Image (tube, rainbow, N blue to C red; front, side, top):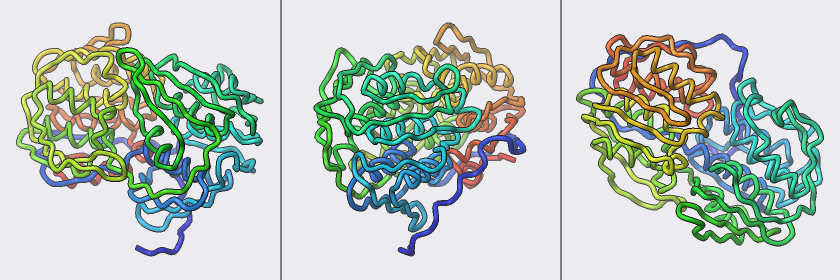
Length: 456
């Protein structure tokens, strides 16, 4: 690998281009060994905390999808030196907490709610104004849940679109007030934005969540030298305390394989007869493997091999074989550990015997699309019996007819989930656009074809 710096690759277009439809047809048995791309959540946080640290942060295994590249570009606009040194290898020289400079142009996060919301927290503790924007899909997503706690800490919202949506302009403050906050919804993004703002605050910032959400921010803050403590809160939640104004130091980050991306080849192998694959280096953080837990309850043959620790995260190889799945009830408290995987779980449920009931999916309504409605519409297009009852989804399994076109609503996970379903459907499944898959999984189509999937 060359050590010479390379420019940040430009993200692909995020809106307005010609659609790229695709059709997945009934597939022969899948086989092979694959590694899903680097975890998106860890990739965003590695770049942002590298930019907030003093010294150099070397990152390996970074996800080079559009969402993460937009975060890398934003870090550079704010004054950090961000260089790509090889395939998935990056170097960030940070400016320290409170050291961001005012960007000369809007920070454009494309389709990434994670990038936008986390960076609002990171910018909050700097005496600068910055404009945040994104594509048509991101402009529809709620930002008030982040703006509310940040304004309580002293951040000023100078401009905003109707309903507190993008585009919006924030004025940060070098002397933020630390405070105690209980998140109104289980959201790792809201929690993380408050903690990142708390780095620049006087005193100790405390965040309580009644349902534990993914804890990558807490782990990485500790890795970079912050003083942070985590304690139980209530039956399923946690209380996080962060001492303000630490001196963060650059630290190496190894990004593990993303379980949300690995979910697609994993479910494909379960529902395509005769399949036997290995997924390498998958993150096994307990707050990220709700899908694996659920699938095993459904009867999935998933063998966990060589479990180990890499870069502060538990990883393992998974052997996955075709399985006779059965319907189960998925409790609401499991949602934070698998919130991005419900679309592909719906594909697995469609191929299972009996009915799968998924409780507590309110958060799906405010993702890249209204994912609950998009999943229901896609199931209807494929002839799968289902029902939405409040925030619950019921899917009746059985032979899947397939069909389409499935409207993806500019949502990468909807596109991938229904292409997976097409591999086990009588008539295949056609989706209306695959362009947005590049936001999180640029190699999805070639990887699936390499396993033997028939996707045209």
